[in-house]
Image 1 (tube, rainbow, N blue to C red):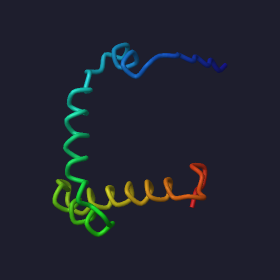
Image 2 (tube, rainbow, N blue to C red):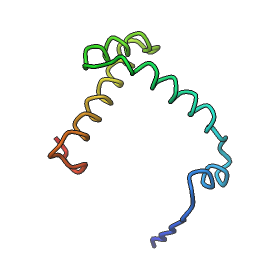
Image 3 (cartoon, rainbow, N blue to C red):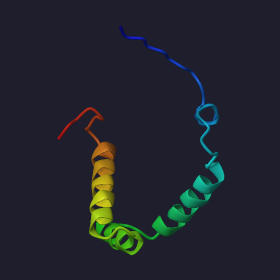
Length: 86
């Protein structure tokens, strides 16, 4: 037996319902800090150098960050869709 429940709510309502903390202020500070740091980045090499400075988990964290950046670049490149699995 399968039961499908769909709840229509905002992210804030979902966090409150699940008892999770409101991280909106911390997220805003983080996004602002990252935006300021990325203003001078004009190519992937600069981005990789910046990521090395931030990577607290060493090589594993760097590989995770690199895969995130590559995925973002693929998803945002013209002519590709989000359903491509290459």
